[in-house]
Length: 270
Image (tube, rainbow, N blue to C red):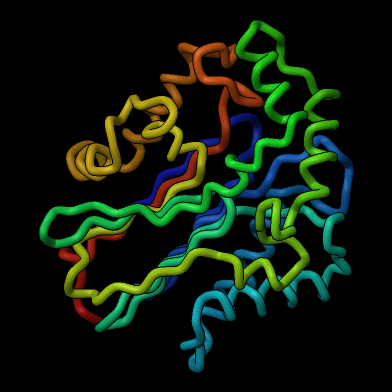
């Protein structure tokens, strides 16, 4: 097991939680609106509840049920309302001696390398394929030379929020437990899996769109040969070379970055 993190600005809103038989990586959504807690607060709070649920002796439910219960608990404990709550993308990996189960919700990625060398990716791209005109226009303006604009970002986030956890929009962890049942989930026999990567979108962008890593096998290879922090450093340096986001349009120079890798060939079968 190895993890690496790097804040995009002063304080990261990504959270990595390592448990005896599970890993959770959360990406709190940065918001320019004042509200009931930041994305980082929500990611940490939901992460702690997921840790509690995942370490219960009877915790054998489908991960979507675990996530739904955790979202509901946090919403009730902090009086959060759907559509007005901070939110977080996330990915979860849980394993037993026989199986490995993965889940992703919103723009997080889980990449799996099998013992025969093939690589597959579990990814939720619904936020990025939800091309609201306000979002498309702002990104195009950045590509054309406009500076980062907090007021325009605020407007974009406001209209995007209207489509949060809606059938024709996108799904994310916030205060609606039903979002958990829209997560993507996969199950693998443990003896077929060599390693798994869990990354936030601040790291996944190194493969697409930056292509400073040719593909996901290249990320596995870099982690193996140079360590998890080397991947984060590579993506960070690419962004330093494009500080105004002209080459790769985005909403800030650096996003928060978090990565966890589990080497199952090097682990006991417990």
